[in-house]
Structure formats: structure tokens, C-alpha cells
Image (cartoon, rainbow, N blue to C red; front, side):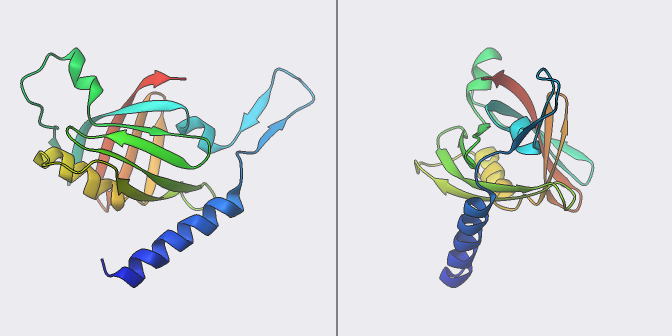
Length: 162
């Protein structure tokens, strides 16, 4: 990506985040009923990558030889209420900013900054490239789908709720 396109994307995301502000929470007359925005459904949760799906083909992340429970320490992403996110592939950590627009088919824009740079497994590189191109999402219970192409998506499972 050339520098001017990269800068334009960063500026767009910055202004979009500033204009969105904090998550809006509206309360009804009943104090027990709270309607929150779509952002709060994504935020304060850690999501673990289960698989990539491309044109119907399921592709699972590659792990070195570790126990099943340890796998949940890798290929994760956590969205925060201030429109930032943090994540971990296998060797690299990353963070970035994102914007959710629920008025247009649950669109989401994200920009990633890799915070540690080490050699990576193919799955990690694939995840980072896919996250750079996410355009919409779908949220079903504990499953988050991030679409990055016409028939391509990342499937995450919620593992931690803060």
C-alpha cells in the first residue's frame, strides 16, 4: 500500500473514531433495561480464532506441538470500548483502531499496527492480512465472524468476557 493511501486510511479511521465518541448507552424508564450499541457486544471480550473459511473451505490455524488448552493463548483479538483492539498471533502481537457502522450492514473498518515483529507462521500472517481487509461482521451468541472477502471470513469464539 503506498504512503498516501495508508495515511488516508489512518486519517479516515481517526476522524471516524473521534466522531463516534464513546459508546452510547440509552436507558428506558425501567432501570433494569439497558439498550447498548453493537460496539458493546464486541467489546471487553477476548475472541479466539477457530478457523478461516474461504469459498466454503475450512482452514485451521497451525500451532506448534502444544496442548489444546494452550492453543487459546494464541490467535486472539480483544476489542475495547474506546475503538481500539489488541491481539496476538503466534509470535507477534498487534493492536489497532476500528470503527463499527451498524447502519450499513454491520460494517467494520480496522487498521492494524504490528507491535512485535518476528518471523511468523503462515496462519499468523494470513490472520493479520485478513484483519486488514475486514469489511463486515456477524455476531451470533459466542461466535464472531469477520468477513474479509466475498466468501471469506474468520470465525472466532468468545473465550473471555470482562
